[in-house]
Amino acid sequence: MNSFTGRSNTISPVPLAGVEQKRHEATSSHSPCTTVTTPLPSPVAISVGREAQHVRQVRSLAAVWLRNICHMPESRIEQALVVISELVTNAVLHGTGQCVTYNSWAPQPGLVRIEIDDGTTGEEPTPRHAAPLAESGRGLFLTNAFVGDLDGEWGYCKDGATAWCHIPIHEPQRAPGHP
Image (cartoon, rainbow, N blue to C red):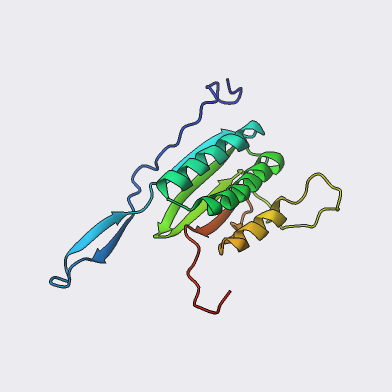
């Protein structure tokens, strides 16, 4: 039982009401007005209490969404989950709001946006270098490295309460001879 809400700690994904995202493509050379509507992956949102055990629950929800709804390749899912875990952990450890909210959706085909909001406004957090033997302090450094490896981008909204990242679902195709 969650002492904050008085409800069970069971977590389930909640599709965002009223959000319908579509892409139109011409499908016939005979009629340029013929289109096919291909829906983007359904969005998901969840709010959890600021307790460490909820990091694993958000990570599990995100894994299911990325794997089964977005069809992200497994190698990219593992890296994206490190990013999500680090950002949710930061929100749990350093936020002062009563809950942490996780949102993810596809703003366009082939791209996911992930947001973690801890309800704490203030200065925008920045990656730092932890001492070699420190047990913590590497979360944003790891986030920066993994999002870069995924050819994505990340940051914080101006008030510092919401961390966000854009991650391509598939590895970008590179021209021959380019790394």
